[in-house]
Image 1 (cartoon, rainbow, N blue to C red):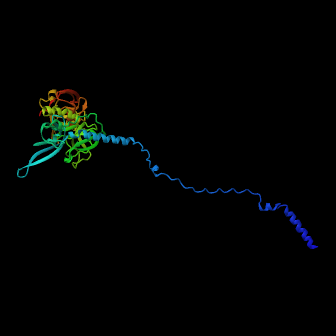
Image 2: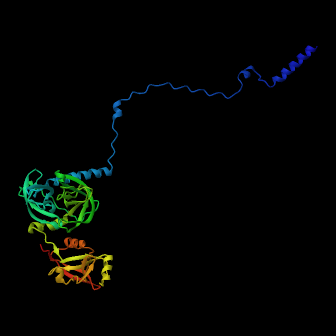
Image 3: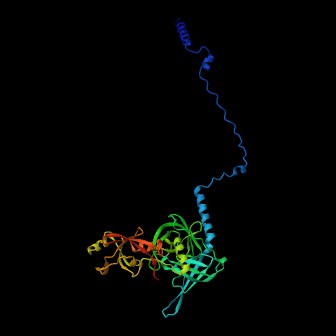
Length: 408
């Protein structure tokens, strides 16, 4: 009886569990759920196509050169063309002279410089210091022909000289003259010469400065000088300084260098001076310098002006030239300029004070003796009348003076 009771209880329990279980065996095996995605098959590997190697060697298009590169090419071509067009007009000049040894025996000496052909008549332009004290001058043309040259004219004050050689016109290649009054700092220039004996050497640079003043071979001053960084060395003297068109803008004349080799500071006499001086050298043999006739002047300064005031002189300015002496019968003397009249002692120096103080010519300020020489040589001519501004007894005056040729 007890066993039947347990059997009934078991059946009831199974019946209650059946309410929460799947109704079929299939539901027990495959319960309801989100199906998994079908996996994507891997792609089947393929063999890459065969490419023709020649097709990969096709060059890419070359880009156009930038403007800067084009400008450099043009500059290079201009330099080459200038050298080729005028290089045959540059000559070598040999200066032969004689010294004496301890036993007074003559010893030959040689120096060299450069020059250039001026015209088909055989005139050669160079520096005065290249031909100075020469016993014999030789000109070597680009074809190696060497000719004896004679001096036609020379001007130490401008460091210019003209030689002449007897040569067939076909051997002479004149170089055209340009202008120097329109030069600008930064402009490219070309120097051609014979530095250290290396014939027709070309160097390139720019105009570094304008209006420089340097000392001339006769201890005067050359004004309006061109400064360049084109390499100038011993032997370049007398050679041309050219623009990129192959026209002469100057005559190379000096360098500033403790080592006597190029230090990037070279000087050239401007071609406008050549235009003014050379025709006179050919016609006269010398250049007629305008002459005012002031024999001795004293540069004023603030300190010197105060010293003169202490001596009782009326000095209303602190820049200018105190006129100490005037040459007799000179233009200044004839015009009535006044020289010093009273002697005073300044240390070991005796000064003549009381003369005019020159401050300007034609309205151009004159502060030093160098300014005076430069103005007369570059801005005036023989026979020209200038207006000289002076201070006399505290009063400003303008006196007309007619310049004459400087005595030789």
